[in-house]
Image (tube, rainbow, N blue to C red; front, side, top):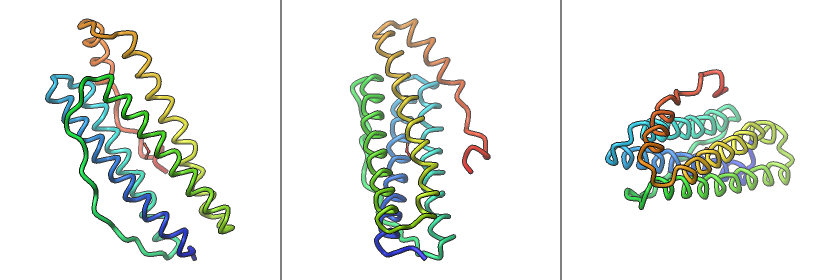
Length: 170
Ligand code: FEO
């Protein structure tokens, strides 16, 4: 049985993950509009992954016999200055999500909820990977700067991202 404090915090995280999905879908649509289909593809897959994260929380609360309560999803930005700005914002957002996951882990420790600690470990590892991936993209973007050829090549590379295999979501 989840404590009320743990359940409330997990429900908040569903909202944060859904908002992340909405943010990345908006970024994907921005890239579509900019004629960067590879970047649009990358962000769309990112949006799908965030939705998968939200569903992991949904399933976990249900497994623990808790109650999922869905809240309104806040508005997201629709325009950015350039590609670099989008990824700087993505990194800042992922750092915020990492802090939220750490806070959830703190609550699980406080509440002596070992099952939630075990569940949250997956997200702790995932955040390390997410921040590293975005940092790598940022490094490349800073190297490419405004070079048209470089951006073309990078967009082609971003097109290669495919959805994570189902077992990676377990
Ligand atoms: Fe669900 Fe990108 O953190």
